[in-house]
Length: 353
Image (cartoon, rainbow, N blue to C red; front, side, top):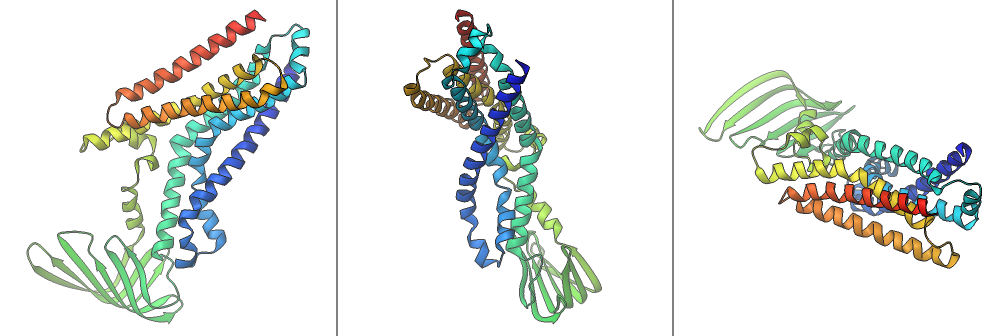
């Protein structure tokens, strides 16, 4: 039976991988189409665009995997049943429960990956995506021409002339990110290297908007780290882009925002467990259903309907928890109840055979 378990695991793994890749690719095409304008507006190559939008696929994979596992399990087990191997298994005195071993193995692998993805891979992918988007839209690598070299969130860099070798003449900078003060810079020469803005022979004017007072400082050389703006933009990330510890810390300054962060934390903890529910549902419906070929398509449709209902309930409760945290607990109860009921049904049915 050890070799049978390996064969079943291998087939389920390949089927899950195929379904995941297919659905993820289709979803990625739809998602990436929203950023297609970057190709022409920001003069981005197709390779850069693919790399830039590939970060979106991480969350798509996490969404698709639990469903892909169920489809993979159902597809492989249905083939196993149709080829009369289940009958041969019973004739050899073995219980269908022996097939649960490869099922639990593939589920363990997927659930483990999903937790790693939610805790580490997804937030880092979003950070890389936002950094790449920021660099593309704001020209951190300056073009070989004068004009706007950099512009974001009230911080803009302009050049009057291009001197060659990525050096620019007559640099003018406006920094209006601080509501109380406005800073302006002027330099005869400037360049941007590795996200560092380097100015030479210029002056810095500080305008205090509250006191209506100005101050001027001349400098020979001045460096400004544009990466600081990138890091500052990290604070504005959406909740789904944050790390688990950031969600756990919440936001004490805003009750609504704190509840939203905590709700998403519970969603990231609970969602991988849907893989167990979907896999057990597929196993129950295929192995213990009437083994007739004409029922196979109906079984698949019934399985998809069950997955859609459970997934829909999960996300409904998750969204409702933004207003009432009780619904986050309901999701845990629903998943635990589903796993318990399905496990009990499998146990009862296999002992009746």
